[in-house]
Image (cartoon, rainbow, N blue to C red; front, top):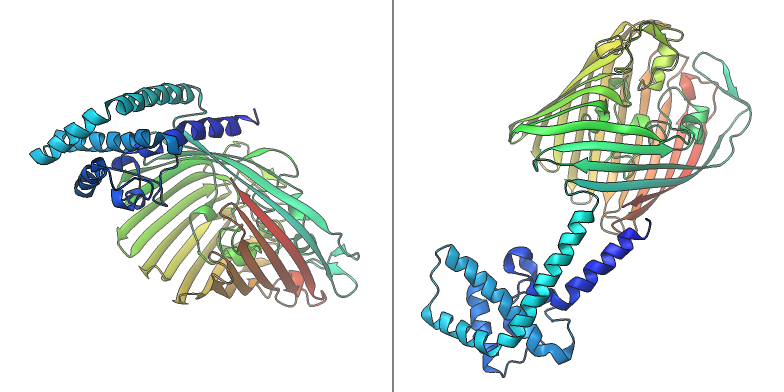
Length: 511
C-alpha cells in the first residue's frame, strides 16, 4: 500500500510527458500559453510554422512548457507540431460552438494544416483515447472523488530547567526539586476533507501525539497558566490515536458560513492572528498564542460556529461549545475533556452536568474590523458556565503590519469567574509582541512576545510573566524548522519560584 502514491505518480508522468503539447488553453494557466515564435524548437522556416503562428496569435490555442520548449524526442518533431495543431483545432471548435466568427482565411489555413498532418493527428487522437481509458481506470480505483487527504507531523526536541531549589504551584504545593530531563515529542494528524457541493466541507481529523502535559519542560514546571507548548495540548494523546475534529461546514449564503459538529475547537475560529497562530508556524506558548482567559473550554467539544461578513471590512463570528457534550451523566468530576488547565485550579473537586446544554459550555462573539490587509481589530465576549459556576470575559485582539516586513500585535482581556476556590475573582490578561517577516528567506518569520496570562491578586503573591522568542524557517513548501526559547518568571504567580527557561527545536512536515 505504501507504494501506491509512487505508482500512481509514475503512471501519470509516463502518460503526460509524451503529450504535454495537447493541453488546451482552458486546461492551462495563462502563464503556460505562449506564441509559436517563442517555442525555440519549432522551425520558423516551414510554411506551417507561419500558419500555426498566426492562428496561435489570434486565438491563443497552442500551449508549451513554461521554458517555451517542447520536451519530446527530437525525431518526433512533426508529431509534436501535430500535437500543437490538435490543441488549436480543439480551441477553435469551442470558439465556433460559442458563435465566435472565424475568418475564411484562417479556416483555409487550418484545413491545409490538417491535411498535411493527417497521419500525425490520427496518432495524437489514438494516444488521447488511450490516455482517457487509463485515466478512467485510475478514477475508478482512486481513494475518493470528493475527499482530499492532508497531513502534518511535528517533531520537537525540548530541554529546560530552573534556577533555585524547587518549583511550587499557585497553592504552594511542591511540583519538583529536580531538573527535568530533555524530551523528544511529536504530534501528527491526518485530515480528511470532503466536499459535496464545492462550497461545503466535512472534516474528520485523526491525530496522535506524545505525553501531552508532561512531554515538555515548560508545562511540567508550570502546568496551570498556559506555559505548555500548544501543539502538545491539541489535545494530549499520550500515544493514543483519537479524533481531533469532526464537523460539517457550509455556506447558506455568499456572506454566511456555518459549521456544526461533535468535535470542534473554538480557537480554530475565534481570536485568530496571522502573527501568532497557527502554532506550527507562530508562537508555541499557549497563553501567548491565544487569549488565555477567553477560552475556559479550549479543546475539542460539541457545538456550532457561524461567520457573517456584514460589509467588506466587518465580520461577525460566534461559537457555542460544550465540553462533554456526548455524556448525558450528571455530577461529572475529575478531568473534563476540553477544559483549559486553569479551570482545575479554580474548581478543584467540583462536579457538573454533562450534555450539550449542561454545566460545561461557553458562547463567544467576536466582531472584527479589518480596513486593510495589514490592520485588524477584534472585539470579543465570552460567557458561560464551568462546574456550574458562571464566567464572563471581555477581550480585544489587534494587529498592525506597519511596514512590509514588520508587524506588532497584542491582546487584552478582563473577566469574572464566580464561586472559585479563591472566591469570586476578576482576572486580567495581556500579551504583546513584534514580528519580522521574510527574514533571510521569503516566508520566514521571527517573533518575540511577552504576556501575563492570569493577573489575580487572590492567587499567589505575584504575577507570572511568559516570554517567547522564535524563528520559523521554511526549508521548502512542505518542511519548516523553528528554534523556540521560553522564559517564565514568577511561575504559578509565586515569587518563590525562580526563573524557568526552556529551548525547543521544532520541525514541521506538511503533506
